[in-house]
Length: 162
Image 1 (cartoon, rainbow, N blue to C red):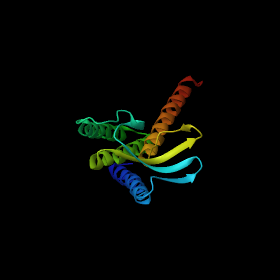
Image 2: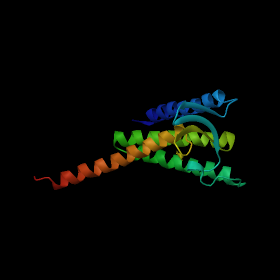
Image 3: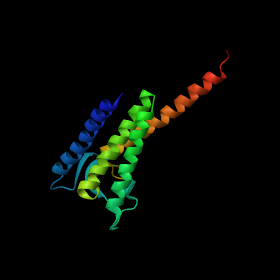
Image 4: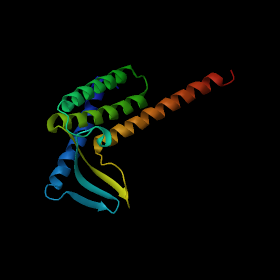
C-alpha cells in the first residue's frame, strides 16, 4: 500500500468519524441522550482532556499543546507506515492515524473532542467515547496482534529443525 492508499483510507475513515459526530450532534440537538439499548446510550459529551477525560479542565495553553502533540504523533505514525513492510501492520497504522486525525480535527475546530457512545450496566459505566477512539483501539489491537504473531513466527522459524 503506497501513499495514495494511505491518503484514501485515512480520508474515508476520518470522514466516517466526523460524519458520525455531526449526525449525533444534530440528533441530540434538543435531548442530551438517546437510549438505544438498556446498556447503550448516545450522549453529548465534550472532552477537553485526553483519553477518558484525563487532564480535563481549564488550562490556557492546553489546546495548542494538545494539537501540537497530536500532529507530532500523527507524523510518527505516518513515518511508521512508510517504514512498515507488513500489510497487517499498515492497516493497524491507518486506523490509529485516522482516529488520531479525527480527534485532532475536533480539538482544532472546537477546542475539545466530541464523544457520544456510552456503555453502562447497572452502576458500572465505561467512559464516553467516539468512532475515532474505536479506530485507535482497533489499530492498537491490530498492531499488538501483528507484533506477537510476527515474533512468534520468527521464533518458530529459528527453532524449527533444518
